[in-house]
Length: 140
Image (cartoon, rainbow, N blue to C red):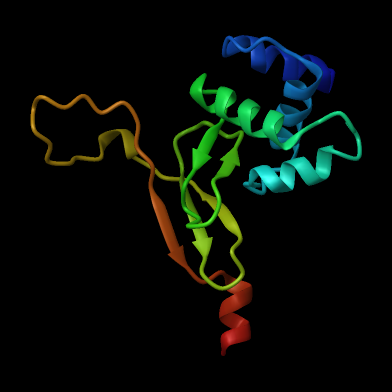
């Protein structure tokens, strides 16, 4: 399938009207599973789309997250990171180099928590922090 068609269909699936900027941002997220922040996305796309503004990037990311097309990840104290993989999974951040990895989680739908009966939980996020293999080797 053509990449542009795939990106356009993804936006339409989540009720987001495709535009050049929205498609470029969504395509970047789908092609770069590095959990980038808005600044990284802007710096990559600006040379390709000189009319792109940081405000457009922030507004588009907010729109995509509100429509459920992407995840906003708050694992980083300084920046929100973004993930096009909206499946149930956890994230791991290396405390030394800052890289964020996806972690598959089995049985997340069966996770049992104690909650008052009047709450309706609509989403959850699981974050882990520690040291990646590369950083562990450098530290030893």
